[in-house]
Image 1 (cartoon, rainbow, N blue to C red):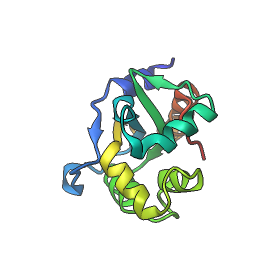
Image 2: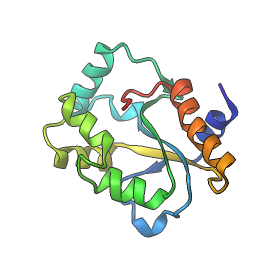
Image 3: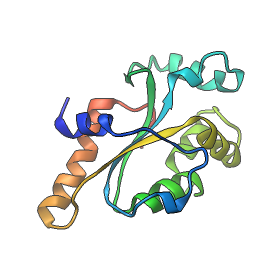
Length: 153
């Protein structure tokens, strides 16, 4: 596992529930959207996701968390709050995946699913120079290779 992935996994896990945009900075970095495995146990509303994970024989876990989606952004607040949580199918890739795989019925249901069950980890990375921008894109790719998230776009 590469250093950037190890550093990302060491970051604090932040819940979407109760998240306010003012609590997020506008820095660049890579992130993982995750679902703590404990949320799947004895919870009927998550049975469809659990069934889907079994169907694809999902094994990409980190300390009991299901790693749903990996991405990069130049603005943490915009990407995680405005796009993933509040956004439409044009900007909220996890919502699209949840609906298209039959885990939830609508985008509104997907928003509630993310708010209620999902967390994220974010690793700030430099993104100013051309070299840093190149490394920034490689970092996202490497994290995807290392973590094998459930949903890849």
